[in-house]
Length: 230
Image (cartoon, rainbow, N blue to C red; front, side, top):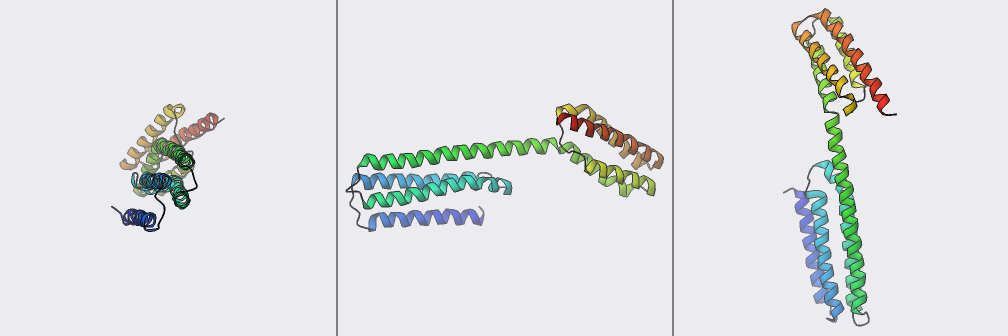
């Protein structure tokens, strides 16, 4: 368990202890409003703990933590509002009807739950889109990695220059794949594999020729990318 997680749990535990001490050391009249306020505030501590868990602990990677801040913010805001309302109603328990306290607490809790569900749905969708994007750029990234390893293997300066030029063209092309590009990308992958074999064999003339061929296939892919975006 990371230090930040331990600190967060410890801070929430200390706040809970302080709240219990305040609730029972201050001579509040123990009316029905007091006990309803106490119960709903304990629930609020649980909601805060759950929101922090979902936001930062459930998915510990940095990106998930960044996306989780809105979830934690909703939980903390609800906890603060419930704590303030609960202590206020405890102090005014003799003059506030139980139904009014329950109604206020229920509204706060309902709003928090709806907010948490909505925020979690948004974060889940962002994660889903991120996963699709990573999958969709995997092919072009793999081809780029192959090309980056080829140029240093070329003994002929002209062949190395041709590989570097094609690598730059690939680098600045649209990295996102799609179903519409599947066929042309298979051709591009095959061209890069042929080029890699020529580099390994030290066939400089074939390297230059295959670079031109691969560049032509890439240009066609770029054209199809633009067509599919309109």
